[in-house]
Image (tube, rainbow, N blue to C red; front, side, top):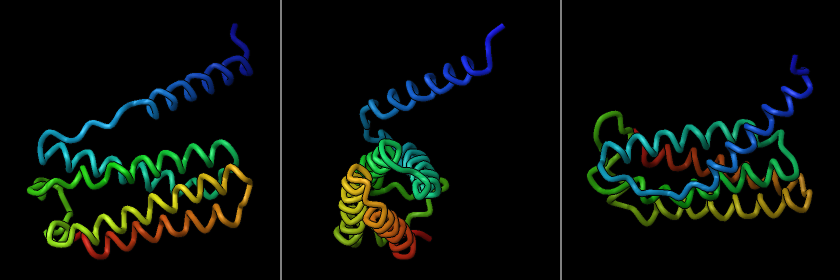
Length: 148
C-alpha cells in the first residue's frame, strides 16, 4: 500500500510538472474572432484566480504567480484583434477606437508585475503588495472603460 506521505509528494510533483509545462507553452495568437474571445476570457479568469491568491504567496511561489501575470498581460493586445466582438464577448468598440489607451493600461500591468517579481524575489512584502494593488487596479480600469 502506498503511504499518504508518498502520495502527497507524488501529487505535488505532478502539479509542479504541470505548472512548468503550462508555463513553458508558447503563446499562439488566435486564428478566429471566436477563438480570441475564448482565449481572452480564459486568460482573464486565470489572472483573476492568480490575483485572488497572490496576496498569500511569498518567495518562489509569488515570483511564479507574477511571472504568469506578466506573461498573460503581454498577450492581451493580441487577444483583441479588430472584429472580435462576437459570441459572448463583453468588449466594447471603444477598445479599437482608443487602442493606445487600452494598451497603456496593459503596459501598466506588465510594469507592475515586473516590479512585483523583483519585490517577491527580494522578500519586500510591501512592494509586492503595492504591485498586486496596481495590477488589480488595471483590471478595474480596463473593465470600466472597455467592457460592457
